[in-house]
Image (tube, rainbow, N blue to C red; front, side):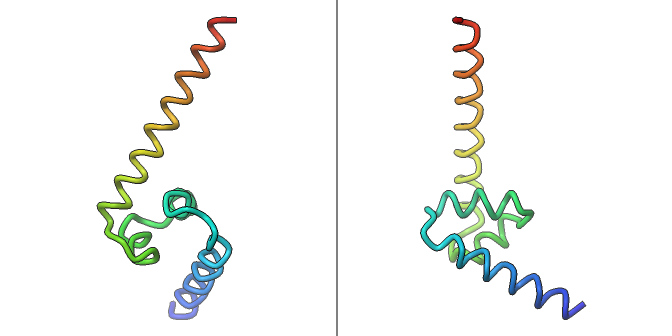
Amino acid sequence: MEGIERVAKLLAFQLMHDMQDASQAEKVKILSKVGFSNPEIAELLGTTSGAVAVQLSRHRAGKKKKKKAKASAKKSK
């Protein structure tokens, strides 16, 4: 089990390195998509799980808004 945890930490480190130029919100979104929990994301990014939850909530709200706008635009055609 310890070997698996080390590999997971190494992959997380590599992912963080690859995302070094991304915004905090983008990092949260990506880490969430690959399966990290809010507390894990918070630990990786040096923030709180509450802040992570807020960023994910804003991201989801933005996706819903875009989806509604897209549907509305299709109806207009």
